[in-house]
Amino acid sequence: MIDLHVLDGLSPLHGEERIAFLEKLTNINVAAIDGSDLATIIAVAVLYLLTFMFMCYVWYNHDYQPIRAKTVKLCTIMYVAGLMWMVGDFQMNGLVELTGAWKSCRVWVVWVRILSSYIYSGMLMIRFYALERIFNQSKPYKGRAMYIPAICLVVVLLAYCLSCQFVEGKYITEYFDYAQICVVDDRFRYASIGLMWVPWTVVLVLAARLRNIQSTFNERYESLVICILAYTILIKTTVIHATHPFYIFEKSYRQSETLIDAVCSCMIILLMLGYPTYQCMFRRDEYEKEWVQKLRKDGVVKKYSGNLQVGSASGYSQMDGSTFNSPPKTNYFEKDPIDTIHMSLNTHMSANFITQPTVAHRRPAVEFSALHMDSVVSLDGSADTNPAYPWHII
Image (cartoon, rainbow, N blue to C red; front, side, top):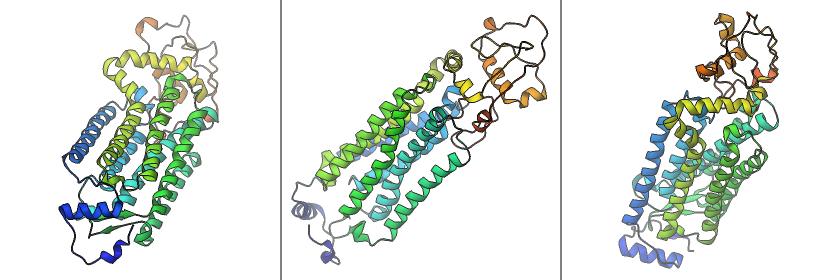
């Protein structure tokens, strides 16, 4: 490929002359941008609009316990990052004419396309790390365990993008007005793709370690499908950039590259939130009741809450799969997290299953580990004052 800098100062080419020049430059048949590229953009926009409507419904029902278990805030960050990723795809994949603001190659390639895709995969990596720490390591996800990975991710991404910003353009990407194209340096191209493999490899390793997670959260199969979708994006991008460096001039490659990114990125979010949202639409109360019962059956409440030792002098049943009676509502019970769990579970049991105490009892002796109190922080770092233990944790 010739050095396009020698053409600086010449009048820009247009139409057939531009296409002919690009074909000589790349030795391939160059397909001009046409209505099918616009249709691709519209299809992606519709897909993300539908996903946006889905996210609005999820947020409207954010207090529904099975939905809260899926970290809605983190999924929202992933959605915004995915949306910016797609906008960057439009420019980087050659679906739009490079005029006006689209000429800012470094902004769109580095700060929009690449950074947003890193944020998307990084958020998913952090979520899997939280599950790994809670379920496999039996440690709380708060404090340093929460902030250090997030800070490290931010530092690495900013360091990489800032270094790309201040390096000379010919080593990253630059715009050539004569041919109206952005040229990406191969070293930068492969470095960016290589860095993309890091978070997705971590996600794959953590997904393998989480294969025996309790079925309450449906993470086993979701993680498998998420990894398949993620590696579909990753392998597809790596292969196309390695074998077709001028893919942006070939209609089938640039459109499929964009559509696959859009479909897979939306499907990952829908997989994480779809099942509880579907149940919220059509079986809201029944599913929440089943979910709470299964939560206890899987032993997740005990895992988070420590050992519950409820003596015989109890005003309600022991948390062992049997039914419960609500304790007296006093200021003490409103503040005690263990009683909050009991009261929360009790509200989801139908009246037919409630049993009354046969004798008057005193308040149970409750013993819980430090892990319980350490775990009462959601993945997004906000404390949860509502009776949502333990499903708001992840």
